[in-house]
Length: 431
Image 1 (tube, one colour):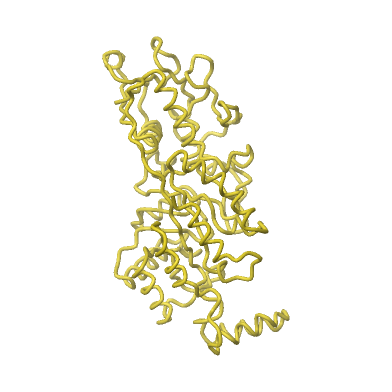
Image 2 (image 1 turned 120 degrees about the horizontal axis):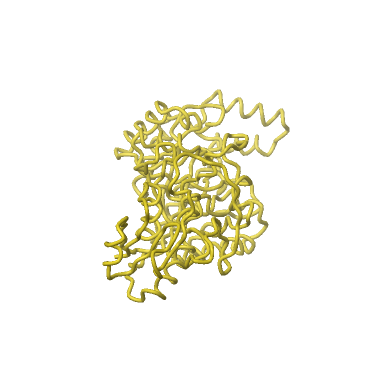
């Protein structure tokens, strides 16, 4: 067991150290605040404080993990053998920065508690993040730091025991618009026709008419094609369906549609199905609870996983609401239009609520890419050039490579053949 001496064991420190050592590295660890216990310990050990006791493995602590609440401070990004780092720790420290404070800053989404101007749908903007501003958004830095720390510890303690975890791949299909034209009801269908005519979208008029007359399949209805693809790869796949009332931001098929209900039940026979929450339920727990209940009743299974509309995570309110409505896992931690790691990691972690200084019982599964981040690329080769770099890093640190796809892009009028691209992505990255 790795023993860490510190002058005070806080919730922040315990949360961060356990994530780094136990969840990422598979190293058993413990804390002590007693010098005599530290000296007596025969196994690997380190000091995390302002000063070393003697000549032990020492990391000089920043104040962040011993504070409470939110404080605004200037962060200067430095270099650690090719990796960006911050919270410099001085010459006596075995590594040049406080890995625990830096990791906590990213994992807790500390910067999202600080004042910022939200985007048009109320999200934290990617350009406000320290990772984007310092060009390390595409690096799972918390995991990379952890493995470099393990290398340094092994030089001092060659027998340190680390249980290696395995790389994981998960494909998520996010369904907020299950059909472009079908199952829309008379009033919404007529409204769509008129809107297309007014805007001279004659191709859409013809396509809508063809779907309504059953001359062709709805372009967004690709669910069983996806199910067939998934059967060919031994991967974890999940479908998140929006199951909500119509609103300005939520325009999926009515939950009363028997055909829509049958579709969801049919997909649930082959794959994990859970809830893609509505925009309204993001801030209304009663609506969220009702959506969860209705979808669970439909598929006769408990709904424990959530994906938020537009990936609209607002800390800490979002996760408090998910906890109170008895969700156990969230798959919304990422940016819709940028590839990379919003929380600096590719390893699932529990949410830490800074306002209450408590680790909340909801596990966050950070995704590396949402397909809308790829629409700017002109070819499959450009897509893979971007994604290969991220994949290699996730594989290197035995992380989870989670990708989010939208059924409407598979059937949309894009320059790329998204279904073929999807097959290629699964084949390329599932191992």
